[in-house]
Length: 225
Image (cartoon, rainbow, N blue to C red; front, top):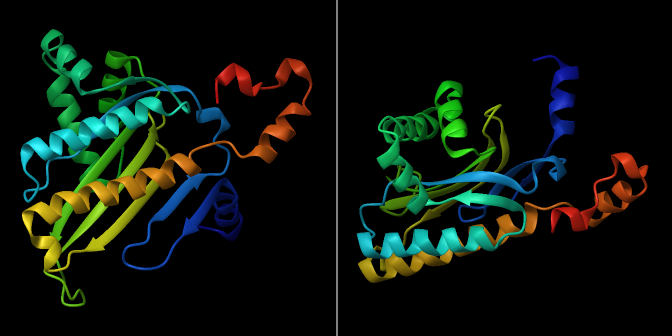
């Protein structure tokens, strides 16, 4: 990659890295205004083995409710609606599962599969949350570590609009099943707190927007944010 292209990419993406094992790392497009109020499909990863199914399902419902309250999104396609569509379109669920698996393993949004989801659900964005559990490496003093990831993707281009990830090494106390559930609740809350704060249009950009001629101006009240 040449220097000009590298500088261009750095100009496009505003990167905020917070050091430390528990600190979140964020990658976000510099201009989020074009990505506000878009209809989005909400996807959750597989349940971590150490979190009981009822607690995991409650956690995902809580996160769905939290996303629904965010004015930055348009209509959200949540799990209940997805399950209804699976009954109507037989090939939709396998395509969705394959899309999500490919995204997790490669970090790439498969265009053909994404087009299927985009047309079936009538969405413009995909919001994906994963909580993954791994055995620790030699450098890790704990026995297990978690990786939490939240990604907002442009459904048509497959490009990430916003990404945040957090790593956490579990202590011996946190290995206890009850503590594991509480830990999952706390870490996801911290992750979503930062997401809500950062997935927005800053005040100075709105000020600049208001200086544009009216025909090309984006009025904040018109977006409801």
